[in-house]
Image (tube, rainbow, N blue to C red):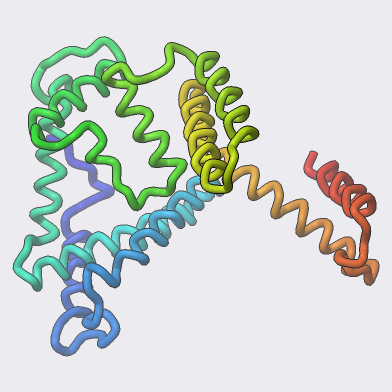
Length: 260
């Protein structure tokens, strides 16, 4: 097995020792009060901060956020050890064995044609390991809805439940828009809106886009324009709520033009 000198066991063991000290009898009262349930929100926050660092393109920030996320892994591993469930080492062994088992084209001499066949074999091996699980059981309900929609669409596509191309999904978007327009009640509107959003994520997937990243980008642009509009208004001593719709639109377009 290849070894990476940048990820030696001694440094990882030192991190585990620090966490064990924090959770020990003479450790940190806050750390000692935590449970896997209380750590849930911190795991989510740190994972999203890693995503933000990736989007920001700053290697130093990514390094820091990966360290914070790794700390959450070690923290949970040590909480599990104190309860007699498993150790962090057990979790490492589990993922190591899984990676080797699900990459026979790398570790067992098998051959694959392309990336698509790699994914097909991964899912096939996974089904043999967890034969009692449904196709969609591995998609966490706690995922952000757009990401979960993409994951569900991908899994369904692997057994044939998918449009042959993006044009078919685009037609489905038009159909869902019509149904949204014709929805007779607020409850029907909410249901049709969900169907429309699901269709949009499917179109994004077929076109090779990440809808979560696309929406984050749109929100960043909106935030940037709003900040420029507010800064201009403050400099002029103007309150935005005192402006009419036409003036607000003029200022918005001016802020939008500054992006380029």
